[in-house]
Image (cartoon, rainbow, N blue to C red):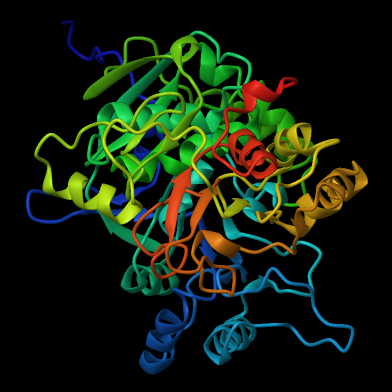
Length: 476
């Protein structure tokens, strides 16, 4: 090489570009990197202890302008009474919400409370506001912060002590994860959704398959997804063990963000767009791991056990545990037998909602099934929009009327039955088909038994009263 010549820049992945652009202090043999955080999302469950730490140590928020707060986990999905009473499930839930109001007021955090037209699930309102943007680092004291990776952001959940660290420093100690390309070729068939895609991936690589890595979802099938669908895919990256999931920003991303309240505008938009267009993975960049998935071969998926990796095509049969004590225990808990087909299995409750599947596209999918049909006798169906904005849009499109005429319950925005700490839960032994993200023992109430599936499968199950392949009903 000639003296003074420089070597060409090493091709980088999307993740590496975002990570490298936020390192305050590099990782060493003995210490993690110090990573700058662009956006800290806060809710009522994991923030009180962190605010108390700041208070005890006499600290203020390092960057209150980089924080946004909402209330969602403990908030009821039942409407406020005419007298103004909010029907909290218990005093603890009410206290958590009141404490968040107090903390945000004291520390200067913008809060979208229950009276706000922008209130909703934290991972729904961030994108709606335009606060979620390509190239950002985003954290929240919630596992499913990976949702925001759909925009080309590096987004992940953090623990309560880390919440306090970000509040005090706007930085976070992190070891650099490895990279993992998830190549999804082909197109999804009619009746097969983004939820089926991510369940298919988790079923293929297992709940620990992505441990220590950040997924980058790539390929024709991913590029064909709308933003709501991309968020569903990235949302459940954590269920495969990944630290985060990312999708490179493209014209679909920019069209979604344009004109949103917290998105750049004017000359700032042009400058941001130029930066965002440079984010996709460079040609020649390599990943530490890769997996290929054929979208065209995917079927509607449903879980049969007590974690999202215990998943199968809806027309398949429950597999044999093959000597696995944990899988045997899971089948016992679920009341299932190896070789059993889930089609036709009686279900008590259907839940359509959560940060995985509560956006307008999810509700539109469900409405195609509910239209001109009725919820089966003895079945409950809860439809819980992810935000006030989603609720207003759904009502403007008449989706709420379709749900109500079918006999489903149209609720207020909330995490609702996903986590069952707000009054929405199953009774012991009851079965639910749920569009949420976790089917752990007791996740939806003590003794609850959960089948995870798409909005199409959930809606079809609601009208038949038993687990149903929505393709049997036509029109999907």
